[in-house]
Image 1 (cartoon, rainbow, N blue to C red):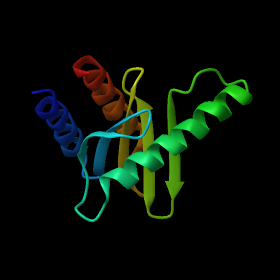
Image 2: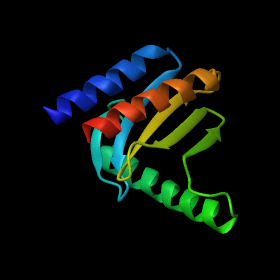
Image 3: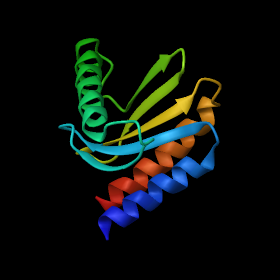
Length: 120
């Protein structure tokens, strides 16, 4: 039941914008909880990378006196990776196209993260 609810939230999120290519909910220690990823992406590898980036972001925010990390954004030539906490033990990660309207993606991701936190 929980898995179905999480997948429903991710599918809804992915459907809010043609610029969102994939999304996943990952535990803070890197275990994949739920995902809507392309078939060519390895869930375990994605989970591990998200956890590593989150750990680095947490430490950077603390060391540079920026408070607690709320979200992290990685921009590459092919698009964006947005990570935002979904409760205290999980992270919502969104992959978006390079031309994505980030304001809308942030808003949709924040809403989805809130829904995910309630489910978890």
